[in-house]
Length: 102
Image (cartoon, rainbow, N blue to C red; front, side, top):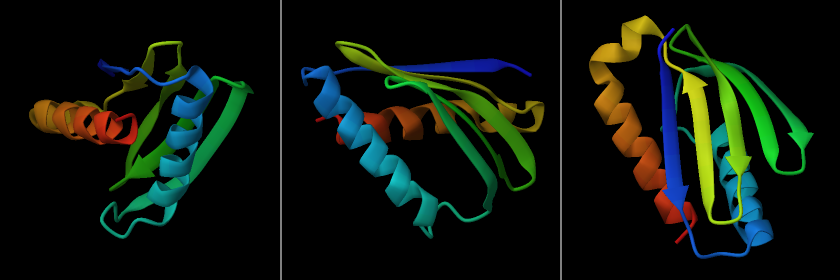
């Protein structure tokens, strides 16, 4: 599977950035716009590093979200079937993360 890396810089304290990201993750779990997300798994390997996996419309997605001092990164595997909408996924995730960290 192809990998996708999203990096969004911020001016927040690392703990504040992480708090905002965690709050957004909880909202995303019940967000009706997301739709067909199932089998959500998350494991905080460290206080700043989340390993996640889920299925969306039957496609498996897995990756790592990491909160760094001046940026948050999301590194995940993109299913081949989603390659035709890769730029849309990248744009939406980048925009959403930028709003969370604004």
